[in-house]
Image 1 (cartoon, rainbow, N blue to C red):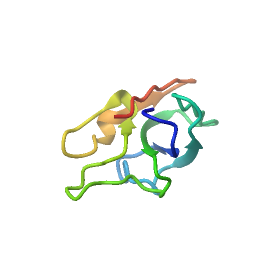
Image 2 (tube, rainbow, N blue to C red):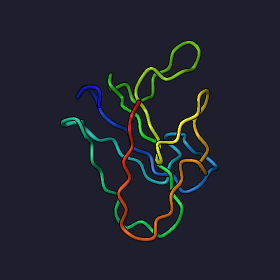
Image 3 (cartoon, rainbow, N blue to C red):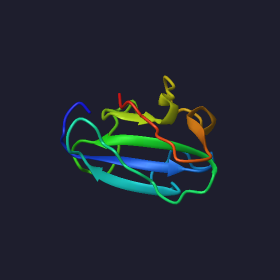
Image 4 (cartoon, one colour):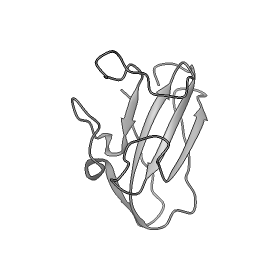
Length: 109
């Protein structure tokens, strides 16, 4: 976390259909930032393939802010720390298999 202002939005997706559109995720949470790390645990997930999309809503306006060119101006990240230059990564690049309890670390940039 670059700072402790605002909240972190965490979206859990189980298909490529709507990834990574916030509001269309399987499960989503908004977590208040307390310290340099945000930890959240999704419980009772079925085994399967999932991907996470996360962003730091620094100004608490409920959206990932972007500049006039459409590039994000707030920090964001995806599972597997997947990144593309001009778009979000694919669900395939960000996805992971869940067969048992799993920790996923995402670096926001």
